[in-house]
Amino acid sequence: MGKRRVIAAASVIAAAGAATLAYASLYERLKFTLRRFDVPVLDSDAEPLRVLQISDLHMTPGQRLKQDWTASLAALDPDLVLLTGDNLAHVDAVPGVARALEPLFDYPGAFVFGSNDYFGPVLKNPFGYFNKNKVNRPGPELPTGELRDLLLKGGWADLNNQRTTLKAGGRTIELAGVDDPHIELDDYDAVAGPVSAEADVSIGVTHAPVGRILDAMAVDGFDLITAGHTHGGQVCVPFYGALVTNCDLDRKRVKGLSRHGDSYLHVSAGMGTSPYTPVRFACPPEASVLTLVPRG
View 1 (spheres, rainbow, N blue to C red):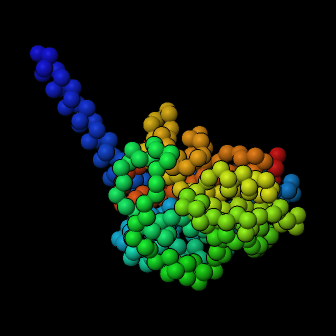
View 2 (view 1 turned 60 degrees about the horizontal axis):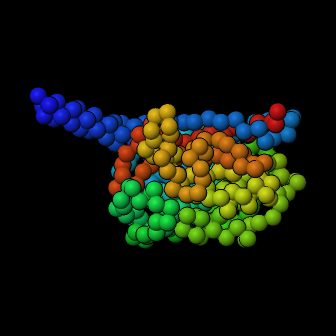
């Protein structure tokens, strides 16, 4: 009798595990979600400004559902679009990214790159993310130049270790960004300095929300800092949250809006996954509308 109970219990656990994996890979991974946040950084008499953040597409050829949903975000009529890296997951993915983003090129935008805009994904042991000293192993080279040309042709500003000012929603927006700190391509010294008093709002942009970049942007006085990279933990435990962030950011800020010094920080859970781990659990893929509103 005891042996039969053990076998029965093991069968139930195995069935539950299989059902959870099926849900995470076949349903939730494709349950694209729009998140909305109000960010109180504008002057008291200012009109709201809508910023659409898209991150971590991890596009592969043929992902038309993701492409169509991303393209549909143009109907939100954003004032500004920020693309926070890791757009590619395949050497032939640039046409898919183009199909997803081209409707959004009607709006002002800016971008930074992540590691998966330079190197393709590789098969990894998922438990390796718990090792803070793990070594990043690059995959095959990706068509970074082709991707950059697409985004520049669309009229968006390249913020990889660059700083610029643009007009969006009738306002002057100061932007500073870094190339991906996760693979140490960042050069904050190239963009460092206090924000301009003449700008209506200032936004720092990075792919990976690592402490040294967030600290520097907050010290320079950026109103808002945007990042991606974490996938919101990707596989989360209900009522507990993310198990890992894949950087030195604490788990409680793995996605969503929080404070970092006097700045607001928004980390997007992103829209994709590595093709080697095509699952999401308790963390659906997302894009975000950040509505900048007057300070309280």
